[in-house]
Image 1: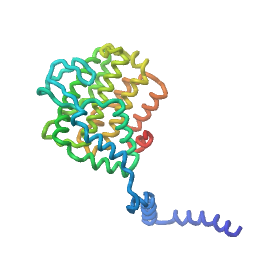
Image 2: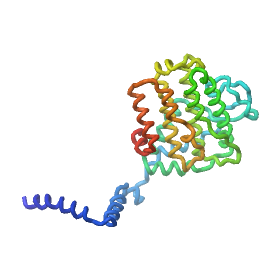
Image 3: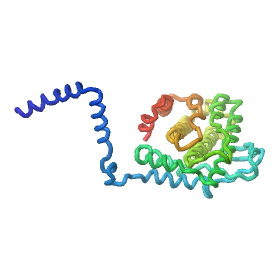
Image 4: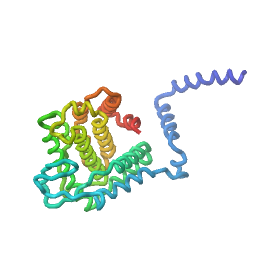
Length: 300
């Protein structure tokens, strides 16, 4: 009983003593506690950190812009590219190699590896360092060509929507990127972001074709309202890609998050008060509040 009484007294005594510590002492103690907060086995080299997800993502990214992950676009005043018809590609110089949109399975696998990676500080550090590596000449050529084609698709999609849905057209136009050339430094991180953007615009075209019965030019708010599950997936893709671009800001030069007007896009696609729509709206508000770490932690 006496021991229990001593322990009960000890708690408030230690609390008072800690509160009365000066700022420097509390700071030193906090630093010590912070230092003990990591994985001591990894910190002391006793156990190798698990970097499987980061390594898997790096392996996939290394293949982007190479044979098997690209397609060819030709200089034409009316071409079909990324699922959209009548795209003006006359700005190209002959046949040009561009990134091909990934399949749904490939997209989900890459997203999963990236999300897993950014949930771990060790894996995040590994990935960010790897993505600083410069793109190969083959990859660089694909990135430059893709940027031109991507902007042409954005222009055509915006023009197609202009008469029936001008506000959505304007929001989509904000996806356009600054043109790149051979003098620009292009990293593996840039390659990843542009691949995700290519996937996004391709998915957007496919979704809008589906909800409008292959008549994007006739897309109405009713089409959007009746197909919110499909439409909101576009916003989900956009937010995820913008988040990744923000994380890669030190490993890439393409400014995706500064290019897309997420508020306008969400306002023009969200025609529902469904739970899914509300969840995406809340996620967007967190993103715009620059609470990145909290938003991403909730995501994974």
